[in-house]
Image 1 (cartoon, rainbow, N blue to C red):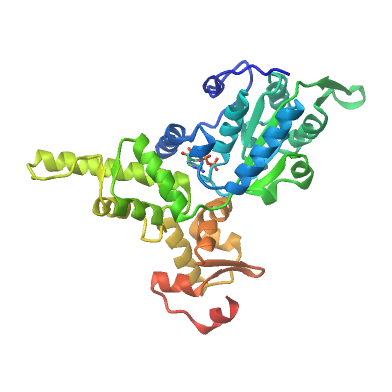
Image 2 (cartoon, rainbow, N blue to C red):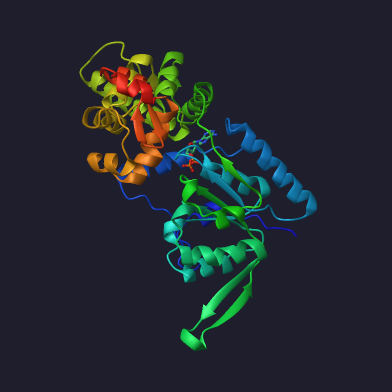
Length: 371
Ligand code: ADP
């Protein structure tokens, strides 16, 4: 089957005709982040750093499908935000020359929304569903036969006169992403016949390479030590690294402009970042030298001060922070666990000795036995 290539840019615009709703970030920071994501998103496999295991597997999957003359099978990516799930979907679309339609779990509210999306796909299109764990159950059940047998079962009418009609769909590949794979039901998970892949946090070296590439794209001269400072604090996460780079550049630019206005001699240009300017910029964002931000520190402080270091349940600590459980579980905890500051035990969350040390709290015996 020959699949026409169409620009994916076009598919990113909201369209009333195809019923596809797109993620539209609401606040200013989110908009800035999403513009930055688009600007810096790798467009070739060799620009996509790390995640070797996933890249190798996906490349084989795509090659095998191409050789058999089939479309690639459905794929699920999971892992914390900003690790490159959406980027992988874009790369697959680009690599296979397919159009990609983008939507998200919460945007597909009704069965009709999904039906409209699926029936508007061209042959071989990729459908990308972000946050698939937030798909409602009724919609999810319509997705099963669509993924498995390429049909859409629609119930028309209500009560005794209700009848089911079956529509044949054109072949498509579903690529889905989630930050919470445990919330994806096992029937849905099992339908990702191409594979379910977990994205790993990046090493400092990999983050360093990503920052280097981004600084070139953003026209920033980044000194070696400055690069290391950003890498060290960027939560092993490309999106955070790019965001810090951009914020440090903004900071340097404003500093340089105000220095020039007040006649300070030998001031570096705004697009040159050294270690000091990066540290000052990140301090302003309240990011400490191991990448903890104010929410991370608040989490650990509450855990240690109010709950004697744990163990304590997720619900309780989220309530004490006035934060949503999902935010705590998906955004705050993975990094703390990765750093060895937090443990998730059967009895609840426990702050480790290292966490006590980092925040300057005394570590008591009771917790020593638990961790
Ligand atoms: P997710 O979908 O997991 O939240 P994204 O794919 O949107 O994350 O990635 C966020 C940004 O981080 C991308 O726009 C890109 O600039 C950068 N990025 C992510 N993964 C990589 C990678 N492996 N190599 C280079 N840049 C990456």
